[in-house]
Image 1 (tube, rainbow, N blue to C red):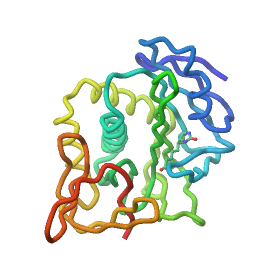
Image 2 (image 1 turned 60 degrees about the horizontal axis):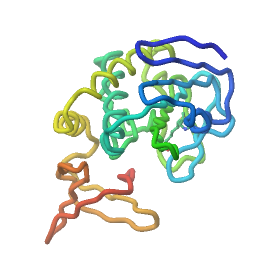
Image 3 (image 1 turned 45 degrees about the vertical axis):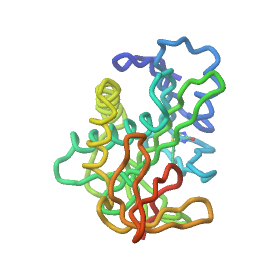
Length: 236
Ligand code: BTN
């Protein structure tokens, strides 16, 4: 394990962990209110995704978890994280159009290249877990099409990605929610188009017309507009 700093973030890099989110959760009780800690692992043996899914974590991709306290709401942290990943990719290349599939999948050309799993410790600290497919992606047994940055001829190493990402994240933390929301929408997958949202076993369709002041997705149906605060847009 090595111990360095990137900006305000104290960075602990491990050769292998079961899950950087699990490790961050295990450290939360000793976190002070102003500390910002970043945990990375070169590989994970039990990487976790949203909705109880697993996250393939072979050597060569990026797996990290940020551990910190923040007065911002979970919705704000989710949008800030997704937006920071998209801004990082845009800094690396102007040839691709990364998008955020609400609430927090990162896509390029309709393929998932990154995922975000945000949790809170019992002390109230945020654990922001991010996985980015830098050089490889799962080709089988996924519920979605996946790709890596390398598939799009983008060569970026883990440390450079992290530095760009953390700079974007810090900058976004100081923006208003309106600014974050508008920037999120400017990068949103299928905005103004028909989408289907998966809510557990339920599916609900309509036109994705925006996000309200609470961060909830607005889904226009024939008669009315639904306000959705859970679930995810499904690939169609
Ligand atoms: C998803 O799209 O389902 C979320 C995937 C989140 C994966 C990252 S990898 C680093 C961190 N540690 C984990 O176990 N999961 C997150």
